[in-house]
Length: 248
Image 1: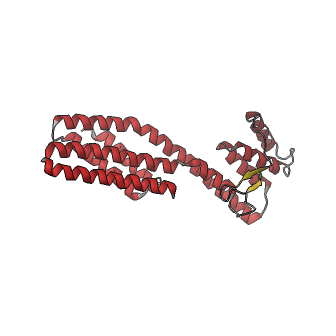
Image 2 (image 1 turned 135 degrees about the vertical axis):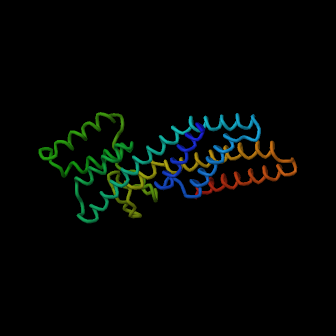
């Protein structure tokens, strides 16, 4: 019974990743199916050595869980910043140039490690924000400079979309009209792709660990070989799909 506690934790996490859009439904459902299969055969192994092997797999999964959970939490925080950046662009579309909005965009970039671009945008924004009225923003910008003293503000930077050199304080690409800051944040996040790859790798490894020993220990060799081949083929298809999505 105790073995089902970590299995249930993994299942709940898989459901949350589906709901939050971290992984596609087919990956999440596959992960849940493999987790329940792992729990069943760990509790009811066909042979003792298979039970011991699957128990080690469960323990390894729980040791691995905090790592993937940390990636998911980091991605969630980045999504919050992306939502705020979307709101900034919406305000610019509605009200036109607004130095306060520009400074908020610089703040979001700085917090996510895009220091050079954030310093350039923040510097431009502060030119329209008198120090007497915006003391907090000016003090914050000075703290940025102190924390990044070795980083020089560049006059230009590449657009993340078309790679054209544009002013480093531009929030809209002058060539392709892309929302530069949004693309920069999305490009640095990367969490969703990482979770998909890690979950697919877990499914592949655990699935094969379940299929091969159980087929070999419970079925005649004539029947076990095709099942093992089918399991390997399914893993290859999953791996190929992940690679194709990575390069698409």
